[in-house]
Image (tube, rainbow, N blue to C red; front, side):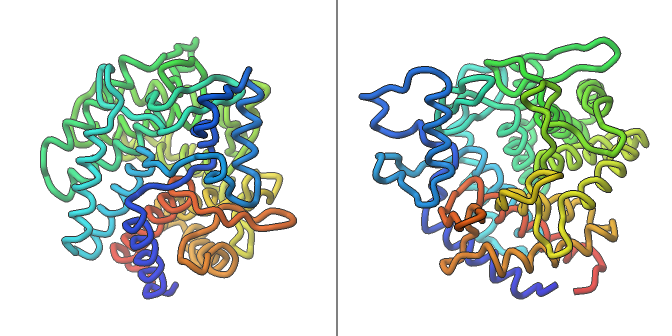
Amino acid sequence: MNIELLKSRIQHLDQIIQDDHYAGYDPFDGLNSALLRYIPLPGVYSKIAWIQFFKKFPINLRPVFFIQKGINPKAMGLFLSGYCALYKTCNEPKYLRSALSIADWLMKNKSPGYSGDCWGYNFNWQNRVFYLPANTPTIVGSSFIGHGFLDLFEITSDIKYLEIAVSITEFMRNDLHITKTPNQGMCFSYTTVDQSMVHNANLLGAGFIARTHNFTGKKEFTELAENAASYTIQHQHDDGSWFYAETKIQSWIDSFHTGYILRSLQHLVNATGNAFYQHAIEKGLSFFIDNFISSDGCVKYYHNNRDPIDIHCFAEALTTCATFIHNAKCKEAIPKILHFLENNMLSQKGYYIYRIGKVKKNKTHYMRWSSAWMFCSLALILQKYFQTDIQT
């Protein structure tokens, strides 16, 4: 584990992020094309096809189709956590200044009109289940942003950042759809406009609420989090895995959504001490390491398919392994994953490329999907190595 190289990669990413003022493209921003103001796309599948064209084409054609770079709130939440981790590790004022600036931006750009603070994406988005207009708040983005504010509260002790986190829980409790199931707890919806039951989204909300409990001591927070966790845990398979969701068209098993679930369950353990969640983590983590992380450090997208080789899978695998760094297999995996990234997915400019395809690499720089996630994960790894007695 080369700590100096790790620091260097973080510094290069930080410079790229600052030079671009946090703005960038996104794999799913195709519907931001200015051409669609004059030639609207009819129907669900035309929108999906349009998004997928820009996502999968190996050359970035967005400038040709008048798609501008934008600032994504979820990316800002990840940057916030990353800068907080760096400040905890290095105690350099510039990292605290960046964190405070991002927090200010987030508070000025939240989605208005809801029971609590919340955020969406900076682009319209269509999938097979629902259409999501820009800035429609999601439980996923709001959870990651909420963790960023809790991280900032930890280093500043400024109560206003804790109050923001509490406000986010109010959004989740009052504005999202909550599906109650017989003997299986409850499940948060992904957004305010759908009633889907997606395991990682549900657990991200539960984990964030549980962590907020640790700072507030509010019993109703743990009750809500445990009710949501109950639904997802009862759908864990015997081998430790989870489907993305329980519908036929969503019954795949992938690496980064599994990582979200595992890290969220750890917040439940921290809040409750319940061995029930620890047992689910142990089963899930064993599946995660054995099925997603290859011996050469490549992180698979699906449990049964190495392709596509996607930067987001690597970032989440690093974050998950850092979260459970005292697990011997996680500790062993981190340097292998970093080595694979260094040799296969690092651009000459210092950012991490999007994907390696069967024929060609897609070297598009995505601010949220790639740089925000890698910046946050590398910062967390650096923090973990300085906090533990792990030999470097």
